[in-house]
Image 1 (cartoon, rainbow, N blue to C red):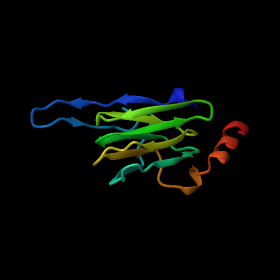
Image 2: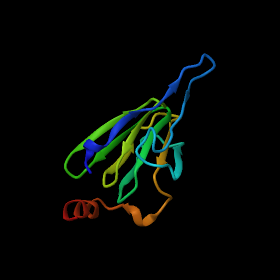
Image 3: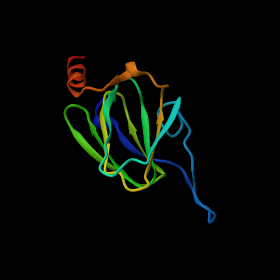
Image 4: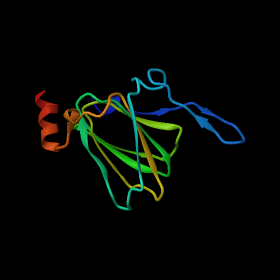
Length: 136
């Protein structure tokens, strides 16, 4: 997998004068079934999150409120995505290092994940990730 496999996904947006509605269906709008949902909030100014990769986990990262950046790194290329719309999500495939920064005040980052939490699925050391990435 590479950064080319990661992309912004436009989610359905139902317009209504009382307020818009967006929904996500696993296997329909995103290429995996949703097993876990978590969110980051009250991130202090200047703080960074992420700093890891997953061996098998697929994720969709959504800026529910405010904005933040996601930096993806496949060991060869790096790309920065600015997320600021609740009807867009960034699909991140396995074996991609990710870092999140540039959080605006009051931002909320929601993540839809293909599996339940499993510490064994993480690469938390970049050098270890790079060895696994290129030595297979």
